[in-house]
Image (cartoon, rainbow, N blue to C red; front, top):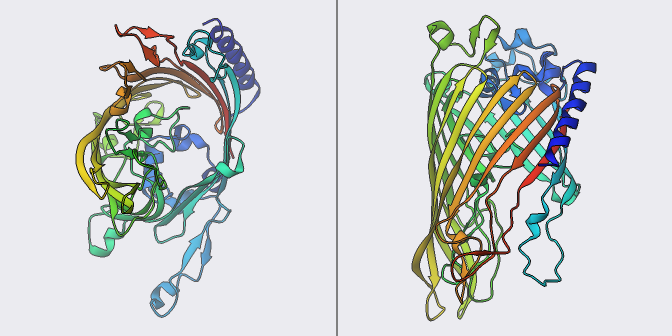
Length: 500
């Protein structure tokens, strides 16, 4: 507490100085094309407001009269008359008038109390493994997005470096989206779109474009079985990028929304028992099997005025704003993880079906948003048989948890956040012979409370702070269940970032 008080006061004074001496206007890729601020589409970037959701749904275009709002006209790839000559000529398209390129960079500072290293037993010569303070480069990314005409949108983002190391970078999303192709089949407007490439699944709340400094724990949860008694080592996490295609329809800002994705199979980690043969984590093909993800949600806009209720944004005395709304949704993922292990007949492969399902909600009132998610995970278990020639069914590995978060836009440039994360999994109860428990006693959970605050220095420059409050833990407990060398891993994290 002695650390956080002075730091917060100093940071607040510093930010007040910045705001007093600078105007607020951002110039990322879409801002350049439309001559507008980032706050046109974002509440606190990268969190979208209702207009930003409609802009994305429309294929990175204004949902109405897009051409009249463009300040930089697109470049025609062919003459408009070619549309009449198709299929005897190439159908004309467009490219953005300016290269739609943006950059993002962030830097972090983290503080952890000395008690985080208390897990070392008395008399141990091991030094502290958790740094008390740490400066860390975040990610340096390049991203491009726009529209090629004919309602064909594109997005590519790539982390050129992560944590200051170029080798840690890689492609995030890279896809083409064919918007409103349902019109070809005389379907209702916006009822069918197609996305192809590598992309984040249509999660209830985007992890890749979250305003939080730390990820939601449930999105990064892998499923690991009991050591020695289960052959489950599934490194798949719901926040991983996937490769495949997705059909979707509806809108994010009102009414129904659905998506169905067919993606490469998740093949994961190493197995327990005999000498292991590892396989890659994430989404990679294994045979012809594909994983499937589905989502459905419905958003009720609760404005009293019916005209405002059915518009992209609600309207009031102060101008356009987000609707007062309640959104309810559900999602399901079915896949198959791969465990490879040396058996008596050579390398054996266990293909273990798994699934994840859950529900979510989001309630918004003006500048206050309360939202949350629950997820349950289940992995089938295939154990090496007694002859080491094949597999036999074993007990499933399971986990559950989620998060509840509230954010409030106290001022147009100040966002306050409070969230609660909770995860409980089989791996939390791993034990060693002799009655010595690791991680936590049976019946407890991993959870944390994380308050935070974010400041927009400009519309494209942000300073953010969060403090993760975690329960007391121990690696060793005595015969009465009392924690020995208890420790906490509370962390205070600050971030400074910009997009251009």
